[in-house]
Length: 297
Image 1 (tube, one colour):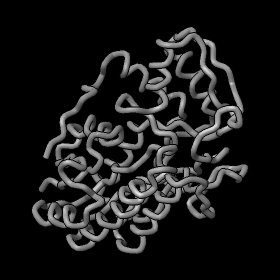
Image 2 (cartoon, helix red, strand yellow):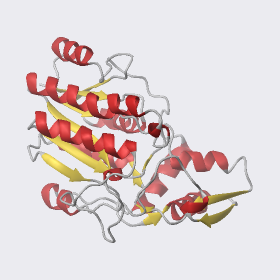
Image 3 (tube, one colour):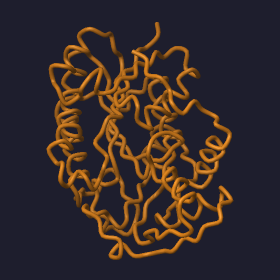
């Protein structure tokens, strides 16, 4: 019998990456929804949807991710990032559904000088990070059958992300100034999507909190340079300090994630970030995917 997987945030980049590989898993039936179909911040909407649809797994890709705007729209960020996961966890518990919830490296304050493990103390610096951490806590308090996956610096062929922004700006400007003192790991959403779907395909019950990112370390400047070098785009990129590029939200200066737990638990080997970036850029160049996948209900 085919397992039915509900994917929230159905038009976002991670859900789009899941959509792109769905055909490789004939025993899984994916149901992609956005807020027009099921508003996760509305408990009644979630409860009614779960009541009308047989669901085995839920992947929560829905999130308020506009980091700077969250500082002035904290009520909306709270609805999506805190109430949403809470509502999903409640319905998952009621209907015996397993939940995969996506979180972020921004739950950390960035003051550590080595990669963060799942056991490290959190200390988010901005509203986005605070609400994502609260969302994790809501899931943990309500539902035992959960996977919480913290990831970092997601990009892909789909949607709005740093890589696509850099490619767009390279057509409009002769030079760019990119921050070089915020350190993390660019993570290809296609790799994360594959990890999540394989987690479900193998019916894993190793529930808990996990980090998942690509391997390696980079600054935003390093990331931008790699994008342009691999794309053979001739543009001058100037490294600047964060202090010279003020933003509404504070960001951690170091948020590299330690992948040891997923390697040991799932025998998973995340790729080095440059390797995955090359794959993504080639896919984009070849128009490898339909970049406007239709939701299915």
